[in-house]
Image 1 (cartoon, helix red, strand yellow):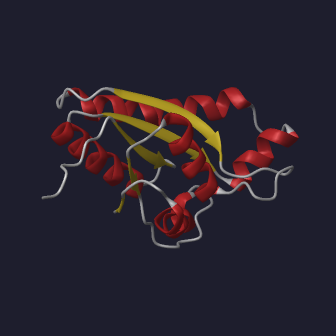
Image 2: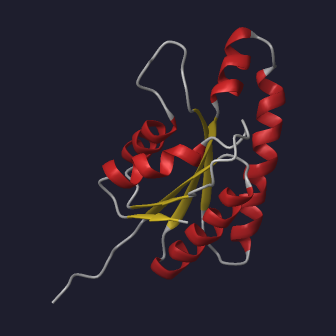
Length: 150
């Protein structure tokens, strides 16, 4: 006899792309099915991280952009009665070579004690805003939690 899956927290990394929105829909659906909460972490790309570190762009400007997307996450969850939390993380660092979107997703999952991860598997389009396009495979290979790649 198999033990039923028990979930308290579903993690969904996002980057503002259409694929991220689809991943959020799946995460909310899974959370609703299992009575869990959703945490959406907005992962900033390399160009954005460098722009912030060098002062080429203001953090407030980026915060406004990411906040608009994460507000959308909360709106999507309203009708399903799923609790949603959000955060933002740098997907790259000029100081830490091992920091990349995949490691950020796994580190966040570990820090939050996430039980399940829904990761967008995006086509490699070259759009600098699409940060998670290469992270899905890494997360699928190294996550200790169940992962759904959409």
